Each structure stands twice: as structure tokens, then as C-alpha cells.
Length: 325
Ligand SMILES: N[C@@H](CCC[C@H](N)C(=O)O)C(=O)O
Image 1 (tube, protein in one colour):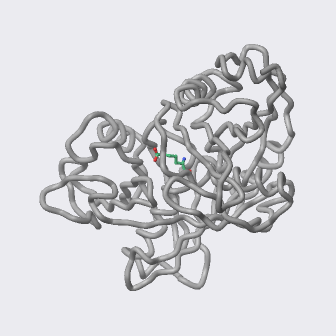
Image 2: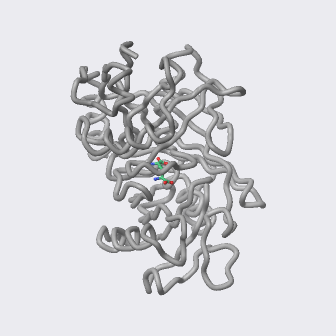
Image 3: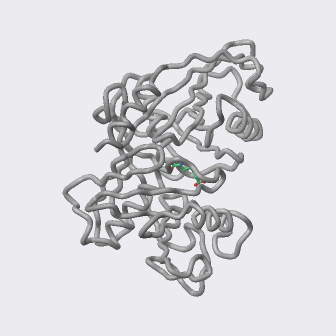
């Protein structure tokens, strides 16, 4: 227990996480310990974060990723997080293409071309896709799917689409994103409510041009984040389905967000659930944190050693470059 362990602080589009590799520990953290560590790290350590990504062993894949939100709840998937875990596993095992186990599926991931000098990028599969009310889950009138639906109880002048990938997303296309309305709706649908009993990630999307979107998300278990990978992926699918006049299937979609920009690739299928989504974006490691395994188990981050990787400077140069274009 006095062994030293390393955590990483990472981000995908400034959606920030800590990565904990459980496979190198003498004793695994229990689920209760993981929950407490996630809450403590995300609130108090190194400026906080949006979640804890736990790397475990996997029988059929190179590794397994679990996602613990900032409030300690566990999510089925995390798109931005998966890119950073993919980079971690890629560097650990010297492989550029492999599968990662997540709660509902084993996902294909691969190293992509750097997004910018010093900004490594990964491409990850986002799957499975469902529109079924049971998989969100949601309840609204007698709907089995919510697609481009007016829901005056949410907001009177907008329409809403609900997609699970497999974590739940509610998407609305708007002429301009109102943070106030997004925040109110996100809060209401993540407090006890009759529509989304397990909460939902809410994204508003502004279509900027052909294959060019701006997406902002209020995340379940977190609140506003700079970006939500599965949110941008589900929004890209909704965009391709609902706005075919602005969608060019032969090209990537550029999805801008408050933390930067990612690319998505949508391959539509006649059976919409069999469509394919890939999410491509940065996988940035900002800090390496060293502490004793004893302190980790005791949720004590007062005696940590932190080293800055310097990668954030390159990421900021990338953000500046996209703002200038
Ligand atoms: N930020 C993530 C999604 C994390 C989980 C989400 N808050 C949930 O509870 O479903 C992403 O990049 O996909």
C-alpha cells in the first residue's frame, strides 16, 4: 500500500478527467472508494474535472473504461474520455488500433493524425445507437421515440430529439444557443422529473454551415461542460437525419464547442440505429500526479506530486488557430 501510483489529468476539448489505471494497483478500489475519489478529485484537485475514467483489465479488449461523473454517478460511456483512455492504452501497449471495453459494448479505437503540432488525436467508435424510449429512458405522451418533437413543457419554440449512444442525450437545433435556457432545462431534467427519470445530457446545436456545427451541452452528473463527446456524436447523427440539405455525407463534420473542435463521421443506414458514428479529436495529457496507494485508498490528495506535461500550450495554440479560421 505504500507503493507510488500515478494518475493523469487529461482532456478532450477541455472536457476534463482524471485517469486512474486500476490494473497497476496492489488492491483495487471498491466502487464506494471510486465514487468518493471521483467526487473529491473533480471538486478539489488541480482545478477540478468533469469525471474520473477508470482503466480496468478486459477479457476481450486491450482494456476496459469505466466513467464516473463528478457527482459520483456512473455513466455508460464518455466519448471525449474514450479518446484519452485510448491514447493511454496505446502508449502503454505500443498499439495504434484496438478495442476498448465499455459498459455496453467493445468499441474500435485508433490513433488519428495529430490535430495540430503537439496535439495528439484519436478516433473512436460511438455505439450502440437507440431511439427507443426504454433505452433513454424517457416518458412523454405515448411516444416510443422522440424525434424533432415539439415539447412545450421543455421550451415552447424548439423541437427535441432523444438518442442513446448508449448514454442518454436530448438534442435541440437552435438559431443561437441560449446558455440560460440550456442551463434551466438541463437542471430541470436532471432533478427528479417525469420525463427523464434517470436524467439526460442536454445539447443545443447551432448549424453554422454545411457540416459545421456549434454544440454546447449541460451534462447529467456534472452540469455545463466545455464539450461532451457522446453529445456531439449524437447531435451529428440527429443533424444528418434531420438536416439532409446541410449534410454532406462524403465529408467529416466539424463540431465546434466551448473547449475547441472535434470531427465526427456519420454513415447513415436505412435502419437509423445501424448508422455508424466516429468521433475524432484531441487526447491531451496535462498533468501527471504521483501519490501513495495508501493515500489514494484514503481519498487523501493533500500529499501529491504534480508534474505539468506542457501539452496544454500546444492545445491552446490549436484553439487559437481554429478561432482565426
Ligand atoms: N463527457 C462525456 C459524457 C459523460 C457522461 C455523461 N455525463 C452521462 O452521465 O451520460 C462525453 O464526452 O461523452
